[in-house]
Length: 197
Length: 197
DNA sequence: CCTTGAACTGAACACCTATTCAGATAAACA
DNA sequence: TGTTTATCTGAATAGGTGTTCAGTTCAAGG
Image (cartoon, rainbow over the protein chains, first blue to last red):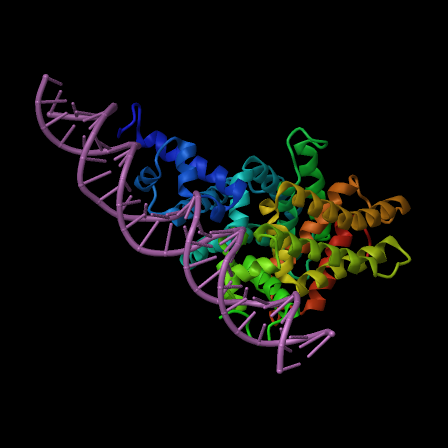
């Protein structure tokens, strides 16, 4: 046997990435073998190497895609008139975006240590660029007196940790609706930096 | 060769746990082999099985020890007169305790998925018991009107995520002193739940 | 001093790992 | 239809995995 009927790189490529994402998120990068990914796609392990240089590149591509998509999405947010409105928008966006992609988020936060040093540096710089969005909002709010933030960098990291934490417990169809969670977290974030509702 | 000179289970046992903790924290449970741990201790892989039933038990023991120590420590905190003072104390305690044990914390939060179902359930229940400490504080604060918390369970998880996030960026000897970080985070936590400084 | 048992080795077991590649097959194009 | 080329297999390479255990050596107690 060799080439499968109906085979095409347009289909197999995305299927490999999807399988890798699911398996990496569920079991962790190190615990997943290329053979498992291949089996999930319905292909032999060797075929994966037509689509990725190695296992490391597979992880890196998933993380880089996630980060660039996240940055592209946050860039489309409309400018709000006040820092308060901007923070509210950012908090709701962050939660919504992350709840829509639990697997990509999980990988992006858990598998950083499995990246090669070069790949790690690339992902880290993308992450810093995302954090800068929030930090800019906090700085503006502090300048206009809307917020009370003794250290904007620290407040940025604190808020992002809080907001990202939603993905650890939120389940669709649970006790709280997504919009409620977004509202409650946005309010907490705003108050945490001394803003008024 | 067989028994090493100066060998004793009082020494080798702790050394194995220490090596496992360090390696698991640095590279992840799945990425670390029993032979690596043994090499770190200066022993052959087979010797590890005099101290642990298997690799899974090694991970579980580390996590269980961490959680029970954490619970024991939080139980020694003195009772404070107000919910505000209690939250302040809890926030400072949580940050201080976690910054003192970065490796144990890292493992406890990252390796949950590598626990067997039974072990996972055990660790999860310990974690819930810890969260209950904070939730009790928030409930009391809400009852006395000191806090404004629409959903105490959610606020609990949000605050813990925020506070634990410190371990991701704080480095001893960095820009900010530990006490400053504790103060700033405690203030943010208090304000996040509508408390007044 | 000698025996007992704790502590450890080194080899083995059965299996899994990432990665490569010659060869085979089906799709795409002429 | 025939030829080219993209796609995939199956086997191989060179190593690593957790775990077990007979045999060996040292430390401790009588």
